[in-house]
Length: 521
Image 1 (cartoon, one colour):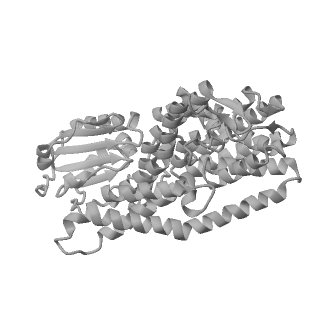
Image 2 (cartoon, rainbow, N blue to C red; image 1 turned 135 degrees about the vertical axis):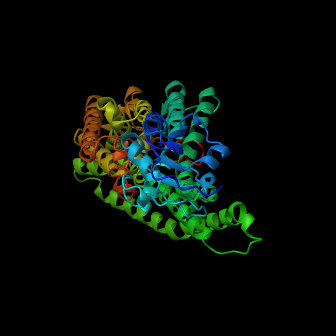
């Protein structure tokens, strides 16, 4: 690529126009990607410049920039809230901003790109500081936010496909037994369930892998995915419950920044060609995997063994208190170690004390039902893909698949997780006080429909009230920080999106036998 010629000072409507390029992309790749492209193209035309815009939407890249386009360009604007490959823009002035800036400040961006830093590649990225309009203000915060959103956007299809296939197979082929809702091994629906289980098993590695990919590009994908797989499989570090989606976020960022660090190591020239495809993936994957198994894994296992013992000491005390605690745990990480600890505790007492499982069963569907209800009550707060995911979450919640809420929690943890926990606590408390019984190790309205619940009216009261609390608290917390997904990748991602997108930006793994653990599942 050639270095850009400095454009004349009077370039614009009254002088020679610039040849500009732009790339727009948002995490879901639906509305905001194309809105930003339209606004930038209109602003360039009104200022007397030519502009070609590549959109990286949900159906893939469109209007792709050619090598000839890049070689002739005076500047490039990347308005995106997900990872965009910049290697083709080496030697060009590159301005990197949030997708919302492309929608709301296109004229200002066109002025700023004239003085943007030249992108050098090899980690020397165009300075985000050149664009004060970009949210978060700092490069580090922007990278964190975009990495998290990149992981979430790739995870959503796995959650939806896996969850819906499991739910359909349970509805049409499941039988209620003392072991829960079981699908006969020789049935067609067992095959459908197995396919759905594979989707669920892959969603945690996908989240981790694409967080790492957004930080350090392709060399980080393998360590990120392997790290996510390890986080999801507690048996690798002697834990009954894996680390869930929270563990996947941790491994994703660890893998990404570890690879960035390895990239900075000076190596002989003859080694450089094999660094990204052999050396970096092997070193990073081995280091991260061993660190998680031998350093993080043992403390995780110890903590949750002690937590199980503590829960055992609470039986026989206040039913409301135990219901609140179990509801909080079930809703906290939606299939992660805290959720699984509460579920396994309740499942272990099904034959002796079914009231404990009753509290768990009422809390299990609250996160997906609550988040799905929130997308129906305040549709404008959510983008198109989130609304679609919300409908899928409602369906999964009915069948006791708590992971249906994970995409919402991963995108804005500081708002969604507290709302989920409050709703779960309310549901658990009501079920506990009413002595609701669940005679199978499963949760959600489906267990009541199939006759496994004692005290059905109060069970549904608990679920409905908990769901309403989660939905209303979610809406209230989102309203406090600004409407829309982009207003919150929040504190859970390092507080990185206070204004990033102004209106957008936005498991448990199956059991070793392949059957999904659908309780907190």
